[in-house]
Length: 552
Image 1 (cartoon, helix red, strand yellow):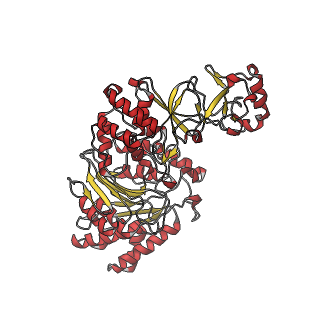
Image 2 (cartoon, one colour):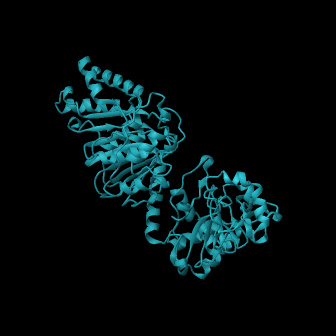
Image 3 (cartoon, one colour):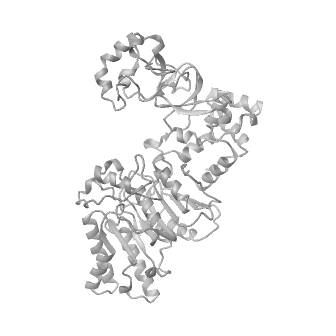
């Protein structure tokens, strides 16, 4: 992977240009991560190089120093023979200074001369920017830590632009930690290991696609520990953390996958650490965790699922055996409704504001809350036809209405090059008249609703059309817990427990082929869909997928 040279930038002061996001890790979690990474005192750590790329006040660094000291004594290495064993970096001078002081105290406590300890601490800990001045490629054995959780747009513009140039995987609305993964992985020698605890969204979100592709091209996923709800940090954080351990060699076998839950603590962590060193792990169910080693892992840019090991294994099996929902063989498509950029103008109740041909009955999420489309009477003022954006002179009534709002419409980013009357999204010709399934963008569980060609979807609704499926049969399959399993595995769960139903997650759903659904099953799925009977739909779906039950 080639990245452009970074711009030389002065380091920020301790206000950090908005570059905070430090979340300090509980010591028992640090020890678990070090164990899973193989940074253990029984190895000759003094002959290796370990990097802590965002050391903060030293939560990981001090634990690493303690293990390094024990390893040196066990291997007969003097403490002054460890000068190159650790590289710790922090962007903020205050953090770097606090870490140096803590390292110096630890080395003095271990018997090192205070002056020598101070020199060692200065050598190990530096004030710098890991993303703009990373280690040389292939030069280190370990990269371990808890990179900061900061959205890239929250970073000062000059630094943000430099980060994008320096980090090829940092696309879209990425978090800064994506760059820490990229440079950490590139820094590893063959067989070297990266172990981070970090927000898990890069595993599923679009902005993590390039990083996931990179991982699959020369690095193995060895361990994934989901820690949602676990008291992993010294303060409560609004994040869904996960431990990932990645090693620089091809994927030889599947990873150890652990789903931890509230109550997971030091005792359970020690059991998981012991599992990390074994190639074969039969499924383990503890009171606050489930663990197993999977037979393989997911490749490419697509998102990685999450859930219990049994659920992730089932997802892999279904993806191998069944085609995706969006399938050219059945002409099934998934999309999202129209975003206007000015709903107060384009969404109206008054049908007199535009010609009949320029109005589409618009379906909103509240219109489908009952399980049927109950149209609210709102219209979309539609400035598009099959040829593109219409000429206003051809539609005088719509033109008069829109010109009243021209000042507001012209201020939108999408209104460029004189196209001030366009909506953000082009309206898809003929979609309103097609039979389709609607799915709201936020819901506790998957909720397909049939529109029989009467309305056009708002951007808070996703739609599914198909030529190869009876839409009620398809609706019954999508109503089932089997379909919902895919959404739960790939979606980011929002506040209040709501799932996010984006097109990228809906496209991960696997379905049996229509010709494999017998007549009795088609009738049963249709009845279940029309009755909104999720349990009945699930029962039929399980048979069609060759399953007896879904894993918990």
